[in-house]
Length: 113
Ligand code: F3S
Ligand code: F3S
Image (cartoon, rainbow, N blue to C red):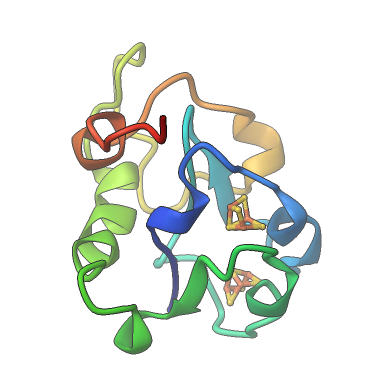
């Protein structure tokens, strides 16, 4: 699947969401996350991102590898402010809406000054 890495953090342009035919790009507080269980690998989101945050999982930039597993974790952990995990098949980002939290990796990521 495709992955969104750290360049998205605090940018959240969201152009990628509009391109995804299966609506599998979900919104956290500081970053968006591609659901690797629902992504059909079409690649439509990749060129839409103005900060080039999106790549195939095996082509993630050096130093950003942690965002591959972290992207999946967004769906399997209980996020702040929720009482259950979103799950592997939440059924589309439109129905879920913006989640008011992130994974620890993203929540604790240094902010740009
Ligand atoms: Fe959607 Fe991008 Fe996957 S457009 S299907 S998240 S490759
Ligand atoms: Fe983030 Fe780029 Fe999408 S900044 S929200 S991955 S268009």
